[in-house]
Length: 293
Ligand code: PHE
Ligand code: FE
Image (cartoon, rainbow, N blue to C red):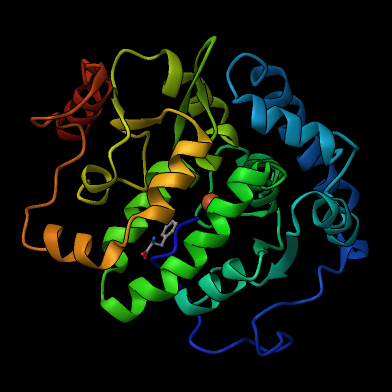
């Protein structure tokens, strides 16, 4: 899900030097395909009117509604024709440089397991539902496809510059938890939201979180939490604008500029924010109280 953590230090047995493994699609059981279908049906019902039109178009174009866990060869063939991306299987989280190198070369790495039927909402590590249902539809959009490939190149550069914590926040608040302003209203496109039934409602409808206009330096200074709903969502004006500002900005001086500044805690509004919705933070406060009680 995030580029910041990894578990193995070298490719585990059975993995290639680039950490990919065969998807071994035939090995998925009927029960595992059933988990995909259950999750798919739940989200497919929720997302019209909530997910961005680019996401919904991608879901359709890639035929992800076909029953069962998608076969990566078929999926990659469709995706390749649209935007030149492929989907490859990996054993779990991979090292940052491996992750970025695949991304820069338009290979999206996906976990090769699916959550258990009794843990539909519980995920410690990204599984194939998060990775494919959450991320891959956006890769069918030519503009977003370019953004993620550019992000991969930017990731390799950030590693060299020691600025990965800053760049990871950009990934978090766009690729994983981004909102976009569309003519009909706010829409979700981040994979962490669209693949979660609870957060796909919370992110748009709940009064608790802040919704703030996207600003590159602001986002790269903002902390995030990985274990609960977000307390801030950032809203991009369009994918074209996101691509433009990230590609046209040289991040090296920006990293230098923000490095000495304090990071911004989750849930905080700061001077200069374009506040679209000032959150009540009621959800976060309720959580904090039950933690003490
Ligand atoms: N322009 C960025 C840099 O100079 C690279 C980048 C592009 C990062 C797009 C993220 C997204 O490092
Ligand atoms: Fe993810």
